[in-house]
Image (cartoon, rainbow, N blue to C red):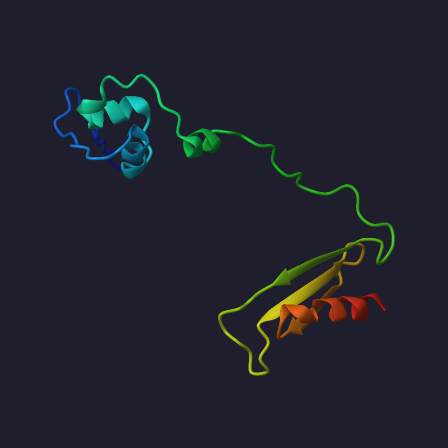
Length: 132
């Protein structure tokens, strides 16, 4: 298997961009969020820019703790903890006119209940029915 190498930015640059934008951030965004060093190579007219802050790029560099692989604390009995989720509206309407659904999942047994709804306003009556 042969290895191929590609030179995207050569020194000196053979290809550069002529930027017609109102700000450095706009040029940065249009070119796919390159680093400041690469941006200066691609757009030589920006060689005097010393720094800029683009919030999306800064947030993309943040790290966060991963979720634990398993949860040590689960409910000790049925119906102590119930997870619920409401979903919809669906682009496709069922034959009976249902566009939404709500799920209830018991944390202890993992038993799942699914209720179909035509409108979100039905949620409270379904919730009271589930509680009974």
